[in-house]
Image 1 (tube, rainbow, N blue to C red):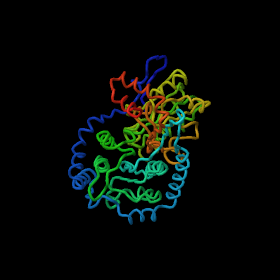
Image 2: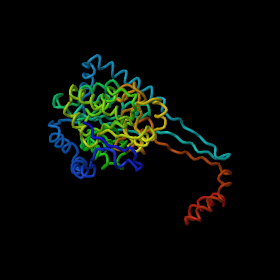
Image 3: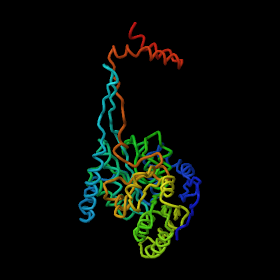
Image 4: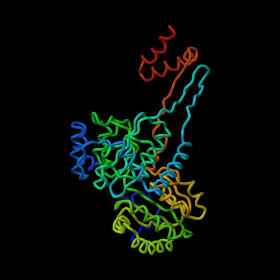
Length: 430
């Protein structure tokens, strides 16, 4: 079922040889540009037209009524409510420990620099609603923003025909449990444009947009980066598993399938030096895929060019391969798994050992599941409290402290042919 890539004996950079979903975000930007521009120019009317065209819902208002949010939590299944409540508690516990404190450094007597951490004022949080519904993504977006101290939180999620044109009821319930009451029934590129530009009388513009979405959402975030801040361009989900012959093929196959059910473009990659494990996983995949609910979607993802088994000489080469791949989710199922995990340089999140599957991180580990994809883990982090904070320096120098360094300022200003910079200092001592 999985494509097989044999890197044994290869000393070349594996980056171009590894499976990866091919997404042309630039082409998608060109396609959604008219939608975004229409929202900028025409506001509600453009959102109404796009929503009717793409989602089959004609909106009479964008904002979800407060009573609908309250009703969603009141009618929520008790088991779902308990699970979401526990997910919120665990996420809040982990993210609370991420909070930064202001730091003041005395550079010289009378001269200090303080780094203050100031939250973004207003944030738009996008929650997908296509092939699956994601109340858990409400938790993962809202909790770190709240811990960071963001005052204005806005959630937007696509309207659902089977919920009267409102977002999924479980998404609304998660908003209620988190105390978020500004929620909009808008999805896709038009939602990102609404958040960025605002809609007069309906929605004030935000300063930053976070949250995963499909290629059209990703394209809109790329187009509007600069108008607003964004967290990342999140693509289809990925799992890579570094495993040796001690790994249980039942577990490995189940974890590969768990991510494949997200999307036909989802990537599931096994990196192993064990041919026996690879063959056993293939047998398990055949058995488990046939029994899973979304067989067609899973099969398409696992047989696509973005998924595969990568054979390596040993775990050292395997580590180099997974670092080159820089997976959104990386599982380590090996002997001494933690030691290998601590050597990983590039991954959105690392799941250590047989009892830490990606599914746990998706919901209840306490970690965040909004993570970099498409190799972006080489330079980007997952969503966290830091995502919503900005560092601002306060520079405070007394007269004597400035006098002591004035000559150096003038020297460097002269070297850079910016004499007014030096004169701005000298003027204080004439």
